[in-house]
Length: 323
Length: 276
Image 1 (cartoon, rainbow over the protein chains, first blue to last red):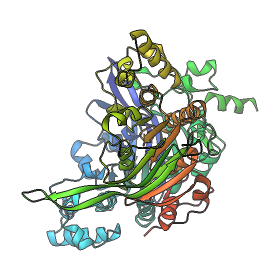
Image 2: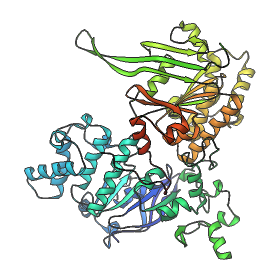
Image 3: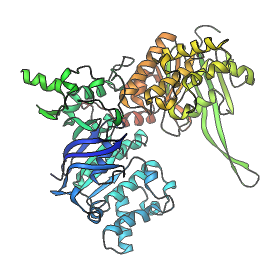
Image 4: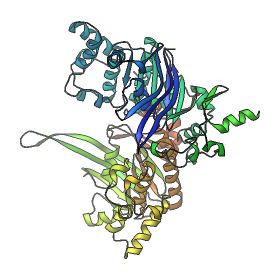
């Protein structure tokens, strides 16, 4: 296991009380595999990724759990030790490449900086390494593009530059936060294809953060669905997409316009995602859930293995006990 | 004009933006944002205008309402050419053609209460004779989007994203339009909320006989709600067909590329192929 996350909890001070916006999240990443963390806005998926690198915003604190990278707990690392992890062992790419790149520095220079920051190499060597990386991420005319400024590149090319930078130190783990959300579908398809290929070639472990179940289906091996700070269901890709167990997962899949018959009413999840300050007691999906029982208001359902799927829902777990 | 005529007929619409350079701001060329675009929207039906960013689909929507000036072409709405109408008559027609935008947070004035936000159109067209009537019209519009009287005194920030988009729709519906131009109206919403709004739009179409010009980049939304689809690429419509036909057998190479790039959440559909 390359990366093991155990009971990670990250909390935020809201209206005078500590609210765990990432609440007891556990998952594993394996070399060459992609785990997708799926959920709607505000479910805590980005915060989970940032917490792994300990880059969560200042107002949030990691209050519990372990992040084990090759067996070593990153949460026990000092700040300088974390510098050695970020970008070297674990890299991250973001949704909007324009805001992640420095607009007044040539893109090639920016990738060289990343290389030279982590390795004692000459400028010349860093330059040729960077051009190699540009070729690796399939940037056409890499030598010319090396001299370009970010605004001279299209969105897809900028994301490729970001990927080149993330790969410059051959990290073991790649965190990708909505890497294709800002891109057009044709470009998105190219970037997903590239990421899947790189995952195999570099034998990296990848955590993909996204809200798009279509994207997940293209690239992920396993899927974890998050709702209000907790993972509510986790399974292998096909299993989760064809036999969703949690009412929320079922609702999400039923709400996808591509899967229903044209013009048919889509299944709705009533209400909206509650803000962390107004999370209900017990299961946080309870107010929107058609299968809610009395028990759901009192306690959190734990994530329990049921057949092929891990699911956190009393309705499913009770059915199982009855049998 | 007969009932068989389309509600909206756009003919050879051309919107070019001049590129000016130098001290005298001489026009040195044009951005051909919309170039000879023609299509029709039938009463009570939905035409989806799809394409990737920068293809000109938004400019088409804005040109129809003369929010940007078109260079050439005709926009026939109920027998009258909107591009040739004098300003005063155009205003009257705008009551029949309303627009719903992508981001309700930026299209709703944050300092106005719901009552006044929704009543803006009612006031502009002088549809209410008294305060009571104005209020009743607003409540009726809110009712159509499943919001209620209790929301009247609230500000936009007090609503969730889905509710704000309902407000945007209520604003448009308040003046009794026949055609809604929805510009990426569900693109910024989470899936579960998007489903609510798509269902609402479908229901409104059945109840009120609305026609939609649905401008979007999202092919799964198109497949779900459109009767006909026009695919735009670089300012031109490259293919136009009934929805099922376009999805089953796209003819133009660009439509094929676009469709094959759409990621499906169905594990039995093969994953995306290579696009290099």
